[in-house]
Length: 143
Image (cartoon, rainbow, N blue to C red; front, side, top):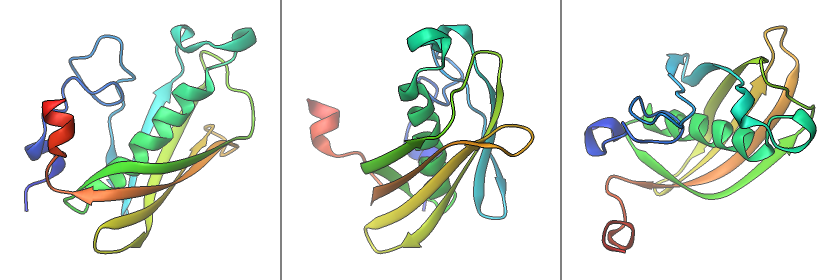
């Protein structure tokens, strides 16, 4: 079965695309079945009062869960996500995101992720249900 990277051109992806100048530029590696990436929060990610926008943190967590599914050779489309923003994050802060699959069914994966500082302080976490597919739905491809 082809990997998601073989099925889809990810170069323009907002979260992990290497050809997206506005993107997050996340680079994942695998550690014991967990998708892991580091990121340095940029000033352009600011939302309210100098804090990194919660939507950016949610996107980072979502991407980690998607890559955790990808490690198993499948593509996961986020059907439902719950994000828990626990501590404020500011530009210049280094974070590590980890995403993993908690439960795997035929067409659905239950996933989780967390964002931590280099000292291990939890700043955000998430859970998601991912619909498993090998191909993108035709509605997305044809509008």
